[in-house]
Length: 336
Ligand code: ADP
Image 1 (cartoon, rainbow, N blue to C red):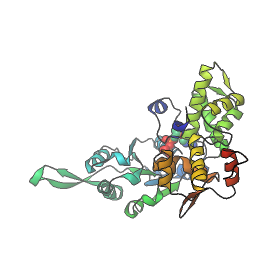
Image 2 (cartoon, rainbow, N blue to C red):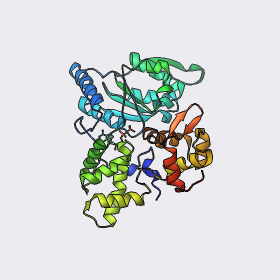
Image 3 (spheres, rainbow, N blue to C red):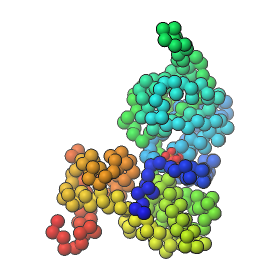
Image 4 (cartoon, rainbow, N blue to C red):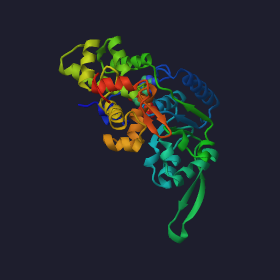
């Protein structure tokens, strides 16, 4: 096991089914400021009996955008439909979903920046006037009819702020960003998930997992599941710090909280490019990962923890980290 799948953007079906899903703002740990605002907005909309304003949520995968939207639907006692931008290939796909929404329901569209332009255009009049154009009939006799739909709330989630078109962005009444989580918040998310899984783990062991979770609840929960597997096989009733250390080593995570891909990426820049800069595409090709995964999964953590920096000419290792990495990868007596 090389630990790579621990950091994958996608959730496995097993994870979705056997997962603790926070149902209230109180269960949702962290993102305090955002939570307070959303509590007020949802409560006000509920008191008025109106749909909430359309909301755009920014943030890397796994930070809790879908979960937050589910909580909002729960609090407002409305339904929620969850879909993703690239899944909607034809305008008819979106029109069918929009027409099926009940009064005040939430439509959550993940990766909204990846929706085809013609499909996106359907959203404009749906968001603004709660109306959609439907084509009736076929061939020469086909005509477009403008039909009303129920007032609804669109929650658009995106990892790329710059890729949302201006007309779409302007139709959102609220626009908010999710932040990476601190280690203590992740520890609490791990303890919460562990309680749901009926798995005993000590707080310091949970904190150790949190330190390897890249500020991301989805990663924290994935590592917990793998550690739980080890505990099960080893017949351990309680997961403590020493056991977590062993499991992390087995999962390919080192004392810096870096996994094999992180180390390969850094080592490639040190070894092949004397610390950089080097373009992302070249790096991706050399280490055999796709560019998007590097950008979304590995880079944010390496950038935040000071192992990597972005320049106009590509990625490079910051000067003050270079000696440490040379020593780590090539030992003290390197000529590099
Ligand atoms: P996103 O939509 O941003 O990709 P998700 O909402 O799917 O992220 O969250 C990923 C996982 O992490 C889910 O299992 C979710 O329940 C959990 N999670 C995310 N944020 C929190 C939080 N603040 N508190 C507790 N669990 C969380």
